[in-house]
Length: 446
Image (cartoon, rainbow, N blue to C red; front, side):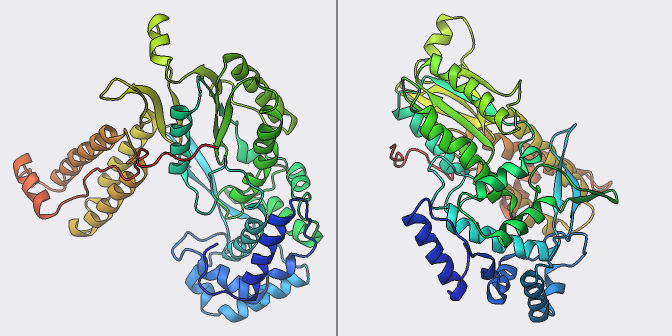
């Protein structure tokens, strides 16, 4: 939760967290009343100011001009059980050269209520969620998940990886099963009905209202929390309780949202876990992608085994990085990683498209600031141990693209490399650097 002042509602959420922590079977029967004016005003203030508007075409500033009356009227509808979430506005963003990813843009009032529900659910389920889950949780992120994988392979007897991809997860989550899972902890009928309304609200696509029978609304504030709750019961607790008690060797799972890998000691365990995952997800109306899910040998003996078997050493992708077995300067085993080919290519093409489109629209000094921010953002995510070569390559390809498009702005003489490097001395761009060092202090493995 992100807030600065502790009001009555926040104190109540703290009490809820305490109850959830002390009694893992405690069921909450009264939650909807927490969505009061003070709380929803905090929810409104927590939203980002310049986000795209939904079908209501109301932005953050416009809603805030009459905030007290708007919030009061919203609370009144919630109390009278008259609030109905508006359908999302569906847009499509590039996923690859040939694919686009659907995204729902919620109306502003939807976002306010979604934020409120998410914080309430967070106060309960953060006490239940397991350590193997890293996605969309407070004080947890993708780099911690990457470091966890690094530490487990380095310091535990891991010889096999089960790489899994849930096919169309966010579009196929069963509403009925999700609500069943929510009822394990929540018995407030009004809160459950409100969540169900968000699930059923649907979206507007090309002027047509679509109301899906399954799935969580992609792009909504509430969706990641609901996805984490669903996978907590379907995957995390099942793996912790059932899988670990039926294997003969070491095994662990690391999950970020719907992306996860299993780290296993023995080959027969890896095969059984892969089949077990397929059966488990089929039970809940989901399936593993037939070509993107597999088990493979991986670990400190992989390079040697691959050489004996006259094959290439196995690699796996996770969170935008390709992981492979490397050697330190002293010839010892280590986990190496680089930006995955798919992500690297996509980032380069994205940068090229942006430079081409922006170069003549505004003055260089204005888009130069944006360029610096884009480079910093790239290094902030991809600047991890063992990946300097990839981010350095991205930096120099970006430099080449910048010079190319600056030279094509007009019919003037082109800027030579010598002049361009002098230009960079006066107007430097962020240099590639390792932001996340996975070797400073190994994470404690339990």
